[in-house]
Image 1 (cartoon, rainbow, N blue to C red):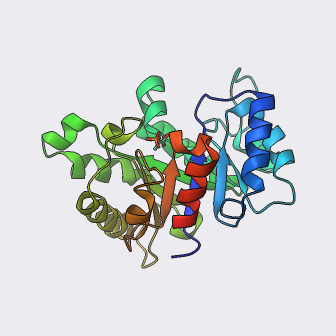
Image 2 (cartoon, rainbow, N blue to C red):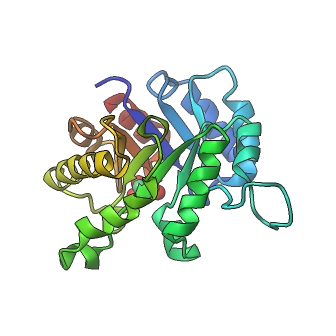
Image 3 (tube, protein in one colour):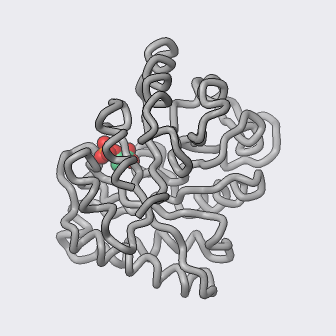
Length: 244
Ligand code: PEP
């Protein structure tokens, strides 16, 4: 199983000194300081993180990128080209919290994906259904629709993170059967959407913790994890990275 991708999403947490101390402790742990581990801090700390991670195996990941490609009058935005400039490697696109609080539509996400790819970075497209959508049996249609933004995108250059909204930050984890089924479905839908025979990499996210990581990451079709809360604590994140 070695080498599955684990990205820690810090969300809107942390301050400079505390985060530097946390990263130093994480880098001192060989379970974390290895290839295929990434950290996604809030935007003001990205360049600092790039410095702290210099010489380590850990990659810098951004939580978002602007839908606008060119420099200009877009107050508050951070372009994919700027993220590449400071040493970023991955960018989350369409996290459910961006969809929920910023109304990010498929049209916006298509532009963001294109910009991230154009900047030479790897987009991690986040998809996931709400509890109502699952209870109404619409989850497959919802995910299929969210994945449609990958049309024309080379599967070797992007990653999908399946994160059921009802499992994010709630402590509720999807069952191993639900995770296995959705990952298999996503891989096969992407073959059709991307018109390719190359299988896309898929991560699972939603209350991944030290005590469930091994079971989740043992699923064949799960190629890694997107971790929120547990990525802010050294031992929890280390256990998850080790399971990968
Ligand atoms: C996330 O933020 O993408 C996430 C999966 O959060 P948590 O692990 O806290 O559920």
